Length: 367
Image 1 (cartoon, one colour):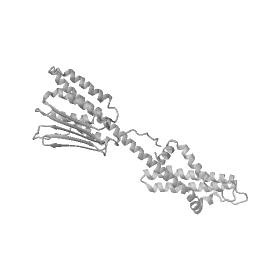
Image 2 (image 1 turned 135 degrees about the vertical axis):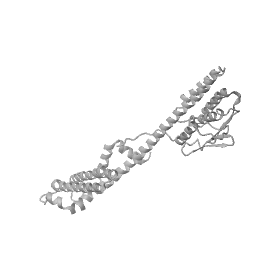
Image 3 (image 1 turned 90 degrees about the horizontal axis):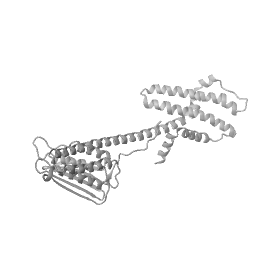
Image 4 (image 1 turned 180 degrees about the horizontal axis):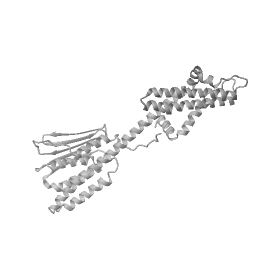
């Protein structure tokens, strides 16, 4: 965390103490004027500090917010002129009729209140410039702080939104997979297939992985490979020898990846390849991880139709959205058709250094 972050965080959480520290610094900076004792100088500084505070809070908490929110700048300018005049006149009255009798030795002449109110030259040249020079610095610092907090809050809200979208996408994916698999088991039960119980056991193992081992933002690739093997075995029970599945995988180290993404790609290949191909469907799956570079290619045969070509279903659309949220600038995801084969390609640049982009951020108090 940078010094600016620490300072803004402190001033946000401890507003009162940060203001006190600021005004203490302003109070002790002025030097003791010549011919004035230390006690008199402290009293003089205390009066000046009061006038500075009035001008600073007037500009920072009234004028600047109006300039930012209102379109009627003329009215805001009138407010500023009137407020500046009132603060300057009040400062002059307090100096002449309260401060000077305390620190000056009589006899001395004093201006009347009417003379003070009508002497615009002194009010502008001396009191306005003196009081409001610090006010604009104070207002600028508050404006910088507010802009910074708004930016941080926007980043937090964007990440929270992305996190919610990711959870929603996973919630869509899991029932989708479960629905398809239960349909498979149901079709086996209708014909009293002897592999029905085995398919139920396979589904139970897959659901254990999906429901209990994929709650985090990432999982080891080895567990996803095991999940894919179980899913493929389960699908083979449905298609028997009619389906040809080739699954090749090589990894040089067990890095983390977003859970269930690979399963959704493979599921799409079975649904739109084997599920719609009444002949001998072929599904080729290749997974490679070398020196942090990840590549996943799934191709499935399909029966060409004159009416339409295969389209991306809800599974691949969910994958696309998840990848944008998790690996926004570090991945390539595309689908294409090569003769009678539908190919899905996913590559991630460097799993060693990539961190999941959607993460919880500590929230700051905004005021």
